[in-house]
Length: 442
Image (cartoon, rainbow, N blue to C red; front, side):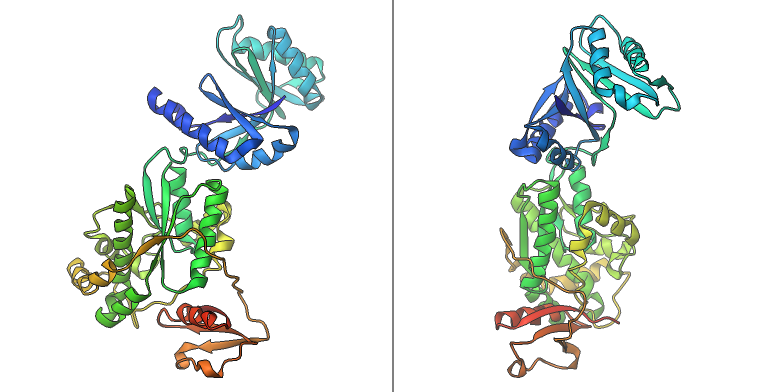
């Protein structure tokens, strides 16, 4: 019978009580990932996944490769045995053809009480495989045959598949991820999930339904593929009124910094509401003007929550490479960029006291902004280019004349300065027009 043997790296070095708890959490996560297609059992502190039938085995391999806490797993032939010679016979029956005419080695391990050692298993099984036409080579081998003996059961396999490693999701604290749906924040969320943290996602919507749908789509990508449909929680705050208040009341060079401070304040409020332990962001030192060391210090001042930045030393290329690896990149690039609201250069070395003073001007607007959970948001299609029938509306040329628009046409709203394109596009869709938005290319 074929089963999957699951191995973890970090869990094994924990103290006994912590290790036992993490193994239980990991087993629960594997059951959620596999659903009714497999059973999860434990023996000698290790986990074995038993597929419902052979058809499910290939599908399960893909799922196990995305369960946090699994360092590697192997599809193994499981069997009961009478003695060491019986082990050798059954390993030869299964893998004799695989080693015939090739150099091989046997790696064995054992747990429980037996009348033989791991070295005995390697010697006897190796002799049986030599009789099948293989040649032993401990260093320059072509095939490695693993034999694990646990109690009265033995497991034999030749390949190990890599898992994401880390700690089981849910084994550490809860965090609020400031989630834009762009390239950085999904990678930051994934990194904290890999460290066992359960995230709630906060999206501050500066656009409209389209941007909400795109961000929610990226959230669902993470939730379905890396938490297997577990509802991690997606929350949304309408940031449009906050932006209006900042544009009206805050000095232009500090607007972007104060805007980021409002995001932290909303996240801190959600942290307190949900009983979370920290705020997570996708910030990286020096990546944009608001992410200099001085600005980051000014932004998080007085937030009252631990702020974690798992990408702090990443380059943009590092983050893009990771986004592609975990599967969020293709979703994230649909999000595009919302325009800045600075109307000029952004302060790169903001004084904490000045940021505090500017933030006080709009504190009431932030505190009056609701944060609500989103259970469903339609993903809007967004093209990267224009069709021949698209009509470009440049907001920098002046306000939109709604009366002159044709509902038979498709409009692309673009802007350069100000968070306007997505908002205007949202208004047009509510009026029945086909519309998308993006930032004007330089």
